[in-house]
Length: 226
Ligand SMILES: NC(=O)c1ccc[n+]([C@@H]2O[C@H](COP(=O)([O-])OP(=O)(O)OC[C@H]3O[C@@H](n4cnc5c(N)ncnc54)[C@H](OP(=O)(O)O)[C@@H]3O)[C@@H](O)[C@H]2O)c1
Image: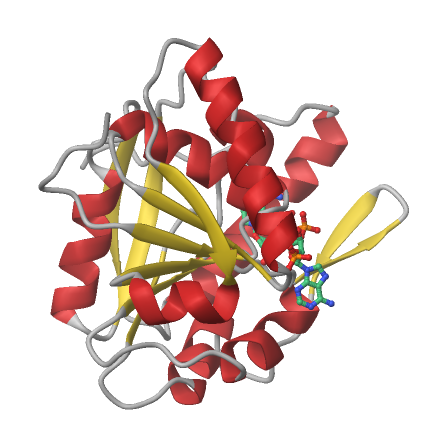
């Protein structure tokens, strides 16, 4: 059952690995979740599948599916879960309502065999470029880049790590940190502005590289001393 005090969270292209993992944990924490997709049928199918899975795990999720476009008009908080090469074009196709908080999870990474490399984003973080692409009144924050979807989506795995949150908008940062807090085992950490999100994007590539090198899918970050 969702918590009536929690906002509805839309997940843009929530049908993939990251979107499914986020929907799982957000629904577990009590958020109503709308899974978005470029095609309605894919969104509905994923929402049905995930709801059945979570019910089998003893949860009572509030999950629905919609096209990305329809979802962007409804949800006050939208999480972007689109592969890096397509995220800017996807965002430009959507009309977020003024006041929407858009949470970006994008990692600018390219894979070459068993190694991962940071893709040069031209001196501006992906998040800054997304902020420049959305309408005035829509505020971008970043979160979840540094945690692998594999562990985030596995309800049997304790998370025990930090989620770095960046934004140029104090309100979007507050909303995003509040969204992270009810997820067991995650601690939101204020990591600064959207310019500083570039460092977090690089740290995410570092985590991916370590996962590949050590042949695990669980390397992530926790800051000590905070
Ligand atoms: N995987 C991870 O561990 C992880 C961790 C942290 C952050 N992230 C970030 O999360 C985002 C999604 O990663 P992912 O691993 O979930 O990717 P993914 O599974 O490969 O794709 C996610 C979804 O993106 C949509 N999509 C595919 N091709 C597209 C295109 N050409 N244009 C627009 N949309 C397209 C698809 O949804 P529809 O066909 O239904 O529209 C797909 O289900 C990335 O930015 C990634 O950096 C991933």
